Image (cartoon, rainbow, N blue to C red; front, side, top):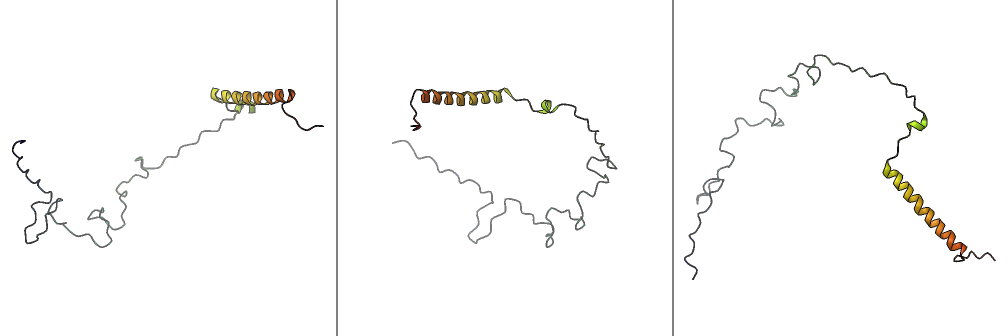
Length: 131
């Protein structure tokens, strides 16, 4: 009723080459078929160059005494310390506006709570059994 069936799609090619034959041959490697030129010696680093001496530093090729390429290391002379002539009050850090607002809000809320309690005590809402 809906027409002819679509043709069967071709099977996508495998990245490992042709499928193994009935004889069970191993598939080809997707990384190439070249074998390593020379197997690494036991315990040798796979990142070392083939002609590098064992334990040689990769940084030994430079004749510089420091990483900035200077032949001799230069020492930076420290600046002389300047005497601070400010008073102790001037050395205090200056508060930010947000800090001032927070302190004023806290103080206002506590003051209103204490004033409300005092009014309630004066009106007789709180009794301390003073007899």
